Length: 128
Image (cartoon, rainbow, N blue to C red; front, side):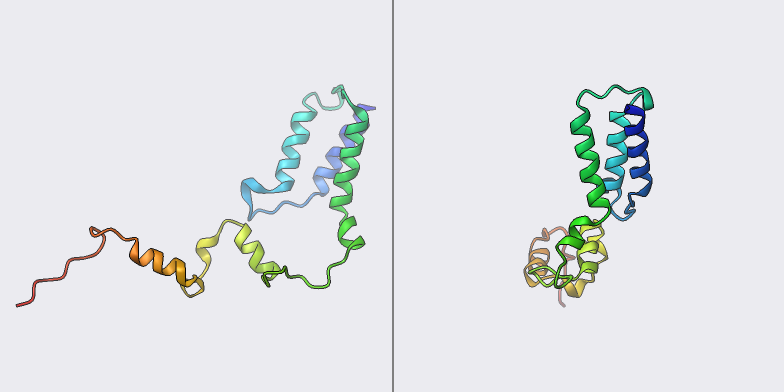
């Protein structure tokens, strides 16, 4: 029976999408690592709690099939902040440096300007 569970988890790992933008924080990568550690012996792995394993598998399948997204559709693809899906993905990807300088907030710009140490500021040439 554990061989069947192992094959089902492998099939789920194949279907689960990977987000290369998130690198080490990707749920698909994490899922693959957890399956590899849980089934170290492959099909011969003995599962201590088969009911818990089956419940976890069914939950992951519902997430992968967008069960909850279809059951509870969203009116808009933005949050209460007004940030779009693309902007949210950019922020969560860890590539915040790609944001333009104009998009910085006033507070952050002021903090950067006034937090420079005196050594960073070039000296003015003495006036003659």
